[in-house]
Length: 129
Image (cartoon, rainbow, N blue to C red):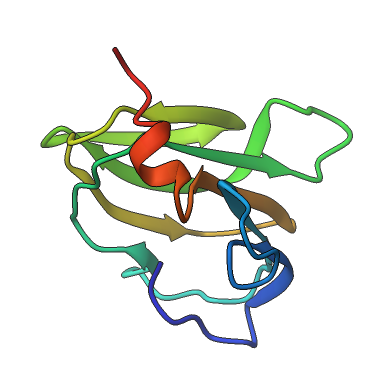
């Protein structure tokens, strides 16, 4: 994850092996808020690959239509670009390139979560196969 603008991103929880020594699973949850009107959007991650699986979730607080993300996420997985405007969860297998991930045009607050193995879990829980 890249550094974020505290005006538009509010951290909720971070759990990893520095918070809970010895844990093997970590996650970070954020509120993404409306307000950034730039066409470039907010880049949340650069292209990278990791040796373990990663899960991400985006869910808007749109009670009129819980499938509507009220934003646009540009997510690259394995070198392919996806433009997503519906609430979603994605699992990215180990060693597969992920990113960049850019979010644009947030209209309602969005819940974001990323989860992954940490500490000894990185070698124990590769995911995928």
